[in-house]
Image (cartoon, rainbow, N blue to C red):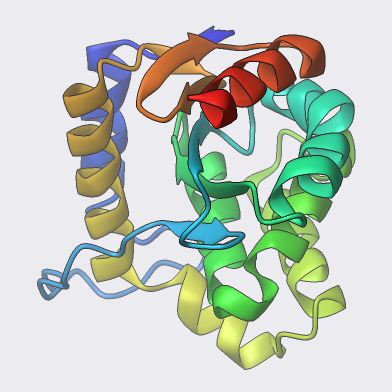
Amino acid sequence: MLKLNRRAMIALAAAASAAMTPAFAEDAPAAEVPPPGDFSIGDANAPVKIVEYASFTCPHCAHFHETVWADLKKNYIDTGKVHFTLREVYFDRVGLWAAMVARCGGEMRYFGIHDMLFSKQSEWLASQDPTVIVDALKAIGLSAGIDAAALDTCLNDQAMAEALVKQFETNMAADGVEGTPTIFVNGEKIGNPSYEDLSAAIDAALAQ
């Protein structure tokens, strides 16, 4: 599990006040935007609510996606037993860029892009050059059907970047989250479970 310290959170919040892509935007202050909210999948009336705190740059989150997500979706989300919400965590500006690309596709494309970001994490994170990383993220967005102009607009949305960082800080503090991935099942924190442990927790919640 990756842990985030307060100093890193403050530094990221400061970084969000500047343009979030290598093509710097103007220095004008960003306009206030409403809280962006989270993306969810599954029946909103499902008896079990799962919240995952995850960073798109977190290798442990990619491992959770690789080893747990497919079975969780097939056996519980797609069957109407679980409503799943992803709460993004930003360890760095790259994770924020990735989230902005995922969000650029809206509700219809979000979880498809989420899948690609985690399954291809080692590829788009392979470079140390921010420009190369942004191009790789844009390629993922393009493959999901988002056009290049829309991606540029999303990645240079300074107001959204600041709102996302503010939301992330507020949620992490409210839920006492210190690292990723962190999973909650009906409000109970269960950390970073295997599929077997998560399944057991879901089944116990369903039996109540």
